[in-house]
Image 1 (cartoon, rainbow, N blue to C red):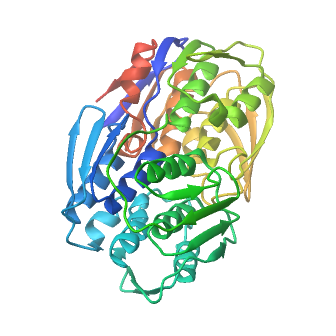
Image 2: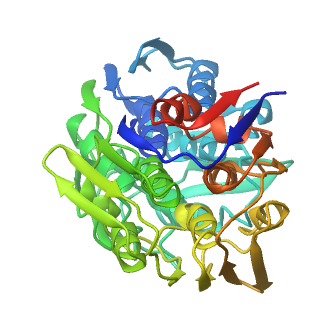
Image 3: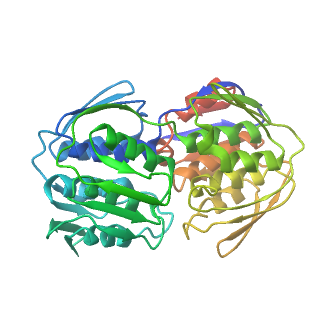
Length: 415
């Protein structure tokens, strides 16, 4: 099994290019199932989750071809609307084919998804929204099965601004007759990217990025060439890497608007964040101040950056507070950070972090994707060597992270 070995204490310096967004690419790949022409996606990251979604599309009958960062998908040959458990359990985003298949065939049978064990992520909101469109949905033997029963656009109010539910409903509604309005929709940039991609295929969608999205159903979606947005979580992780190593890193291929909640907190700590026309420069120092964060749906502070910020807080003398409101089990990295000497106390969904001037290298385990990123960041700051196992979790969401860090001067290798 692969591991990462890091020896901390080096100041990162240089330039890094941020890859395309995993969380934007996956729903776009699912939406390509509805296209009656060839889809060409550029800026696609080379990640395990992307490979799994490619396998899912191929199982459904699509043709998928990859050349470097370009993915070509031809879904005209699809002859199947069932995604088996063997593929669904490998990735949470497999549930996104539900809305796409219902839109394409008015039928779908999809096994419950897998993914990181960071908390309960029920499909209730997905199914409730799809039922409002007129789909009859049943759940049995680990599968969700749906078929059309007088489908028509409706007004749908989400109890919580769920990203996945918003994406699934948008996809199904794109080929559903009438006008669908989603209220209390999730506002993440990845949803705006999905809207822009679908509109490029001929859909009629407005409002993504706001809390109300309107979808006017069309009869057909065509092929399109499209470039996915940069990955804001990868960008955020490298910004924290620059900060925790007290280094200076220039990030290329970023959308600063997507990073504002993180930028505000880094500046509050005392990190210099300097926007440029072609990216952003992050400069660390040794005069940081502790602060607090509370994870919230976008445009609040992203839960996907909470573990990374905890690692940074552990390296800032003083007391910082984290409140996790999205996932109830997203503190699995705490025990691993404690192995490195971090002083972290948990009280329910609140983490109290008493930062130190030094952490120690240790043998730790990546329990999920972002937890793995947090351990890498802590290892950059720690004395001696840190060994991180189960890096397959990290591979799900970071493209060649060890190579990028090595180019910035980190003492890191994969074994």
